[in-house]
Each structure stands twice: as C-alpha cells, then as structure tokens.
Length: 126
Image (cartoon, rainbow, N blue to C red; front, side, top):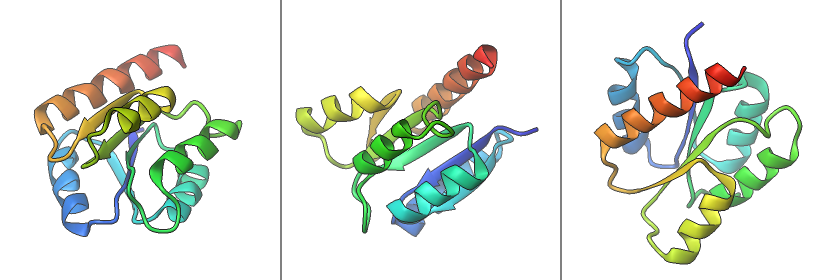
C-alpha cells in the first residue's frame, strides 16, 4: 500500500504544485481546502502524514492539529505545518503539535526529504 498524504491548503495552485512534486515519489495524495474538510478526510482516509497550512478558512491549521491530537484514531498521524507566517510564536506553537514547520515558499527538496524521513520512522514504529 502506498503511503497516503493529506495536503491541506486553501490555495489550489499551491496544492497542484505539491501534487506535481510528490506524485513522482509514489504517494497516494488526498486534498482538503479547509479545516473542516481536513478533519473529515483525516478520520475517513487515515493518512500516513498530513501537510497542513495554518491559515485556512473556517478552522485554522493549529486548531485542526489540536483536534486531531485529541482523538484516538488520529492522534498519531504526523503533521508538517506549512505557512507564510514566520513569527516565533507561530513556529513555537506549531512545534508543540507537529513534527516540523516549513515556511512558504517551500524548499521542496528539504520537504521531500523530511516527508521520507517521517514516513520511514513511523513505518518502523508500526
């Protein structure tokens, strides 16, 4: 079974870029454009990793992550935050709930390596 990644962002162009870059790595990619849909997709599709924007309509990414961490069936899903927000408070808050934080525009090579590392570690633990 291919590792499944949930991409959560409200910018379709950005999602398409991520899909283009990650598809060649053999991942099963699913998408959500807002926080509510992200929660639903995470519960139903059980991704191996979530790429999560912080600034989302209806429910921000930090809140999405906090909700996921409180639920038994989603609390262990690794999360990588992606955001144009660069403040220390944002980064520290994100670091408390997620495996990593990437500032937009993303360094795609670094992101691809980090995704592979996290998926390798979680696969070894399961």
